[in-house]
Length: 256
Image 1 (cartoon, rainbow, N blue to C red):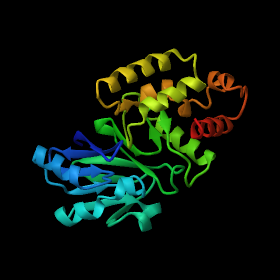
Image 2 (image 1 turned 30 degrees about the vertical axis):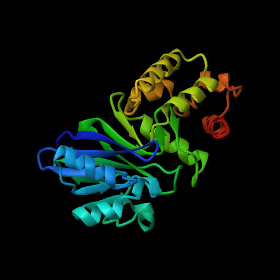
Image 3 (image 1 turned 135 degrees about the horizontal axis):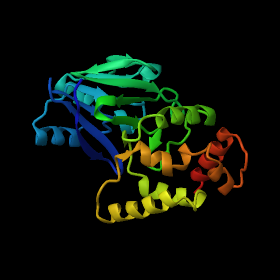
Image 4 (image 1 turned 90 degrees about the horizontal axis):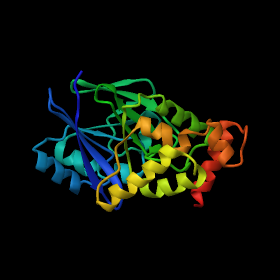
């Protein structure tokens, strides 16, 4: 297997797409392109030729550039089997537990519904890189547009089981706002307090807070800590079921 070169592409107001290149074969993909223009510019800057488009879910701000990019490059579009009818231009549909060969690299596909009914993640183990769309954010998680708290909690538990060093390439730069909310529900978490301060410094310098690592998320992201007694206690939900703690955390974030 081969390690990826990864280049972050800011899009729209706060979206991120990611150029990924497998150096042995020069396979080059973009993950979740909302629009095509900045992706073309990034490809030209690096001298790379697009061969693949990987989509984690159907929302337009993750797939809106698909058809224009495919028309210009002939790229193969890979997306979730459960959402094949909503992924523009899809060529290859992948499902939970499958492995997708990307040049000499391999992506392990995980089905993570909750934000949408067909959401997936791509985990490149050799590169310690997780592309998780809008299910898991730095210090947050996606809204439950098409799923239930039970589904989302299960999906997040799948992701948090990945190794600490896994880099979390999520779909948006929401970290500073997420940190403010996290401190409101988990105010005594020393790791979170330190991380929130670091996030403020990073954003003040005009730099991205993404990717984070799974180790950081496991220690500080309240949506991954719903089964931690300290979080439940801080929220006045002592001995509550983790799904109930997660659902209440998500409810509070929705109105924060």
